[in-house]
Length: 113
Image 1 (cartoon, rainbow, N blue to C red):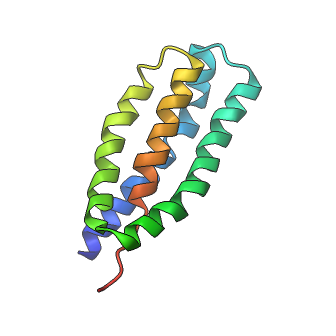
Image 2 (image 1 turned 90 degrees about the vertical axis):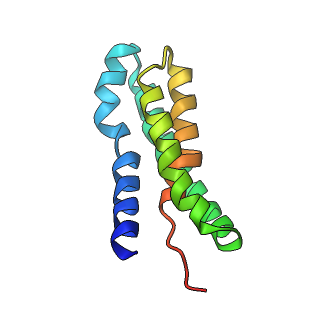
Image 3 (image 1 turned 180 degrees about the horizontal axis):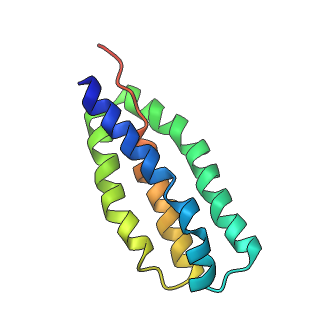
């Protein structure tokens, strides 16, 4: 159990940090301004900061299994979609959904009942 939770948490950390190395690619592909690149980085950090406590609260109230399994599965779907973004706003949408529903759900530690 400990090893599986460790791997899930590690996967979540890898997924949540995948945006930063891609910022130069987004800058070139979408001809972004530095303000827009900063906005991308800020949105990702802000959403993670806001959503993780809420996800933790929901995981305490409901089945943690859904959150532990659902987070990585949603990340598997939405990370590749970032590569198909056709505009800055589509990219923001995919990153926001990824962080709202996928990454934040991975960082939960179930409590013993």
